[in-house]
Length: 101
Image (tube, rainbow, N blue to C red; front, side, top):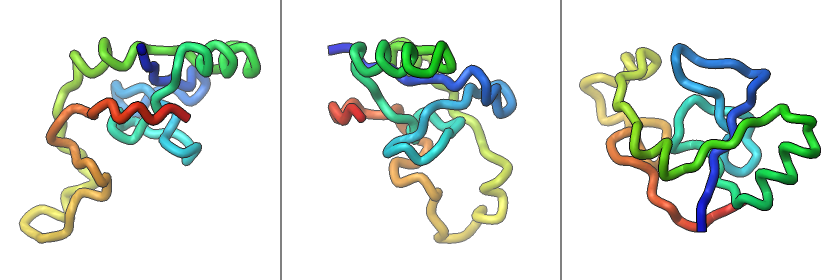
């Protein structure tokens, strides 16, 4: 079953990264690995309820085009044992854990 990320069209971008609906309703994130995955039915309902505030992207299509970048906000962690704040890190594409909203 296809899953989708939702981009908040009103929130714009962080650099070149879209602002995605974050996991567990935790606001928005530029990091795909922190983005919620939705079913087609959920996407259609949310887009309708919010009068087009969101735009849906197929997760598989986005994941095929991910780019690894260095986040300047993590500069203070260089050379330390302080881990990346994202549980999954930035080093591998997100895995589909079938967790829709």
